[in-house]
Length: 508
Image (tube, rainbow, N blue to C red; front, top):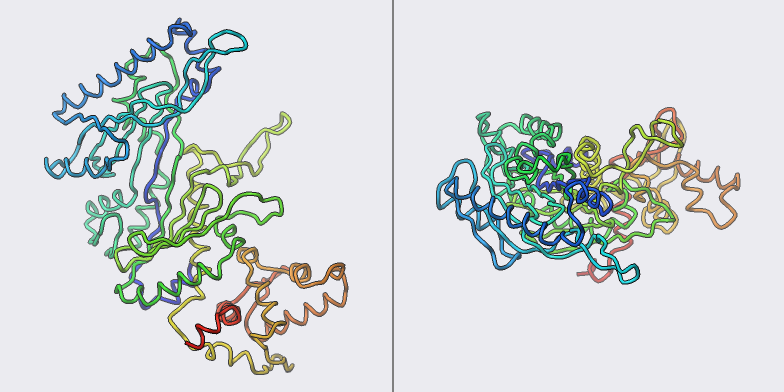
């Protein structure tokens, strides 16, 4: 990321990285599965044959409480015929019409799909059993104008297991923090085109990622939670987890023209040069032969032109916003695809180890690290892209012999089959993070059965010395690893793109 910012520092106003849209899910874990729910019904002395009237009564009670909650505050309660209606837009219109500054805005009711537990008959045993299934039920949307987060909503499922959902926007939270701190800014929707003090703005966003979100969520939902009216249930509180997290890096340019000149080249590079291996590395995933997931990339017009790369449920995308802002955004829908180093129990013994990341807000710190690193790796890959530059300015200097430590090294042939093949291997995505070794190149450049040949090792060593003499790579101190220099990125990417270019486009 630093290389990208250095390369375009004359055009960039500032940059910030932090939460954009975050969707939390609240679950009552003890009744979120059939056996636990059966224990709950037994504790309430509810037979399975009486479950339906019991559940309907509670659903009616929750709906009536929502209507009373809105009426006490003089706010509208409205049933929506279609779940596809833009609820936030309707709430915003009500907020602006009534000129609200804080508190409840409105309550919407809508029938939507949900995950629930219900009673079904088992044909084999001829008995009633509990089943978890997808069905439809009424959901209640409580829209609040929060002093910190601005407009947000809480969604409550009126049927067991009463799942909740809370949606916040980190950019709105930042806008309120900047106002209170007296820092000037220009905002378009949830995008900042200018911030008077980007360093303090980044400090504010970092505060949000370290906040005790579970406590705040419990405080927000306390008044509408069914647990508040049923202490006899003796259930633990809601367990809060991430359903969807968007971590966005915004790079603000001085002028829209600056970004407009650069953006087409960034799109072309992301679409044509970045392959599936690169996408895996951007999202911190290891390249394994056993990987059987799906990796996709697509280009779409959303506000501006947007390119999005998917690795299974998670994604990273790039798009231009408000004309002068370049946004790189990592979206995590399934945190379990990643690892966290923490205490675990193996064979009855406590130990530290890398295990799957939890969905709960307890692993927020690690989740933020993963998403931020993904954005930075993506920008690092784009650092080789700049304004249109004649290729000879990059390729001519390395096409001449050089002298180093009294030794003469031959000229490179950047577009020859031999040297370009070496460039392609070195620029592969799996070497972007940690660099590459002599052995890595042997495995990819050798013929079958040749990788252990001592002569091949020496030949690769001479190639590495040649690239170091031309300043394309450097050796990491006290290791066997090499990494690509900025010059190396520019030269090798140019040579690779030149060989892959359509001759018709070059002749046009």
